[in-house]
Image (cartoon, rainbow, N blue to C red; front, side, top):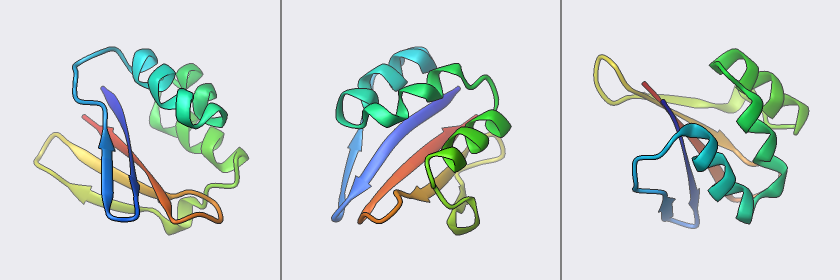
Length: 89
């Protein structure tokens, strides 16, 4: 499962219901339509390639291990004080 969250100005916007990845992308796409293409990404490599095409800097990402099965990948939005968080299990 790949979850999407955004972090902006100290506030976390999180979609808290358990839904399929495509539904997460659809929901986050309401606020950030440019991210709608993530729905076509079936693995993390494809997601990184897509985000790089949107000028996200993969080199600036932070990875936080939640447990042995879950990672949060934090990517700054290009030119904004906003972060995209990919929850990977």
